Image (tube, rainbow, N blue to C red):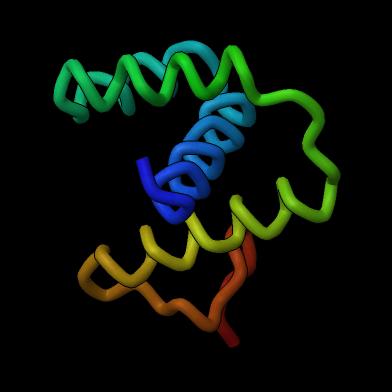
Length: 83
């Protein structure tokens, strides 16, 4: 496994650790079995995560999700209404 693959698995593990159990189940169902197993294994081996790293991973995830949703405005913040 390459360093980039390890980093992507770490990011996925941080995301999984940040979600509620139902969201984790829904997300893992979207992955192939092998990928889901790798993410779960990475979650078990995660170790400590700084608040800065967690924030960076969650921000990256939200930007990716907003970019894949038609009509989503990536410059807006969640929970804020447009002017």
